[in-house]
Image (cartoon, rainbow, N blue to C red; front, side, top):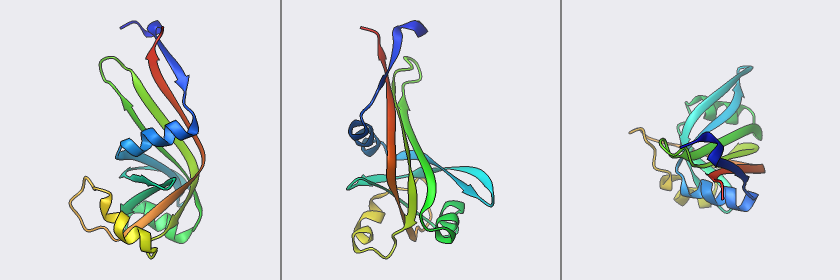
Length: 139
């Protein structure tokens, strides 16, 4: 496929968050110990929040526990390897520990981790900006 036949189309924040809700895997970017850090995570989108279920010992959980309201970026995409068509969503916002929240007691376990380990911390990312692109074929 020729590169010039693909065109990017901006997504509305609502559509971008909707696509994120259909994907279960993404990457979170944050600052830990003064350095930029990126970690892969599984997530669910619920009532406009991005929820991740992790362990309190992870770098992400430790950063959020030490700095409630931690600024973060969350990114997920679905790009076909052969056609190179698909979408990418980027969310900027803040992260907070919501483990003790009643609703997260039932939602945290809905996040299916790709690691077989016990998870004990639910973190909510509150989006402040949601952007996205869909790569489509030129019409």
